Length: 330
Image (cartoon, rainbow, N blue to C red; front, side):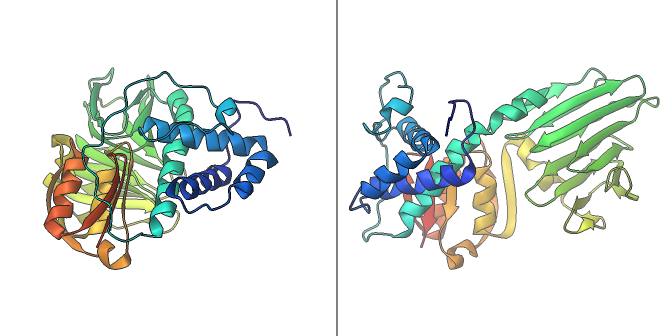
């Protein structure tokens, strides 16, 4: 098989490379013959493994092995950061290599998949970044972390496509040109001033913070519903378009001020939200731990510090590989 360096690595190969790497680095691999055979069986295997080592090098931990060094362009040497703090469990935890493997795969694949978004977007934010931009018509758009939009303005329309993430729209009035946000097969047209649109894993959520909007799903054939101030709807292939529900506007807008607000939410949900603002990997291990209930206000400008305070308040333990891979457990 002929493989060029610019061909993308399939996710199953990247996942396998992460598992091999985690097993070897954790000391669970007693015989490297199987790894060597896997590396030799497909050029993509060696390239994926090299990329995992590159990610790990960027985290400041290891050097590339001789087996795959030829497949990896050597990064410039730099002083590696010292490890400020790391809590290691007293007894070996068998879940740690698998969790680290998953984290490495996510970090590596995430970087590979960012280029298509860059090519489509007019405005985008990096992980942990928030950005406010003024559109040509005077509308203000505030993008949340890891978000991207594309603009399509003409004489008879103002169209914004939310490619990923979340944005707050403060719409400038223009009776001649409606203002519409398209996201994941649905559309939201402003009938007033302020609203939020967020693409989630399984659906898209629209929250109105001032005046009202009309939401249509599916975009080209669905029936529209009016969503008033202080209401929220979601839409997606699994459940269609939901009925409007009341929300707390201040809580919905908290991220624009650098905070997240939770009331009696499961720990897994809180940690997943904090992870959105961190260029790394947060996970809660154990079903009972994931179900712990949390209420509070957390800073998104320093998600690692917020996670540390959350850990301390709940009496949890952690395994940390610098600040990029963090696991909480009982």
